[in-house]
Length: 208
Image 1 (cartoon, rainbow, N blue to C red):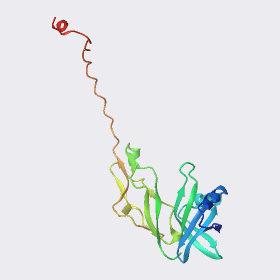
Image 2 (cartoon, helix red, strand yellow):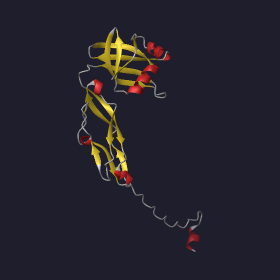
Image 3 (tube, rainbow, N blue to C red):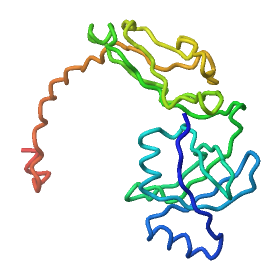
């Protein structure tokens, strides 16, 4: 499902314009891709944050540029190191009937049988590359680990096939595993302390 986002065209130069926009609560951005020339725009920072928070990074964002409806995906973005607020976005204009590749977060669900028996569940892959038409792109992929016993693992090939998207990763790539619990070795008893050396003792004294 596409969500709408209001945008305004902006000038490319001077660079100070971008700082001015940010002070005004707007995020400088650029759109390029399918049937559109590279176009610089700005979006309301709070509205952008709401759209991404509620719909995810893989949602289709529809915007109106010069009276033309443009369907886009977030291709890349930059955020402030300290505040984590988005300070620049690159949108990719897409053909809704053409498949795109994006990363989707892998979320483990269920309680593993092996964990109940004392094993340790380890997630080894946190995102997978998926291919689908823009309206079918998932934000995340749920992987059920309930059946995993100690010593078992689950790979990309074990994830049920979806009618909406295809996982591009290699089939044998491991997603998660349940391992034996690590047994802490008891520390060895400390060796008996050596007899302290008397500082300043002369050789003659030591020979007596």
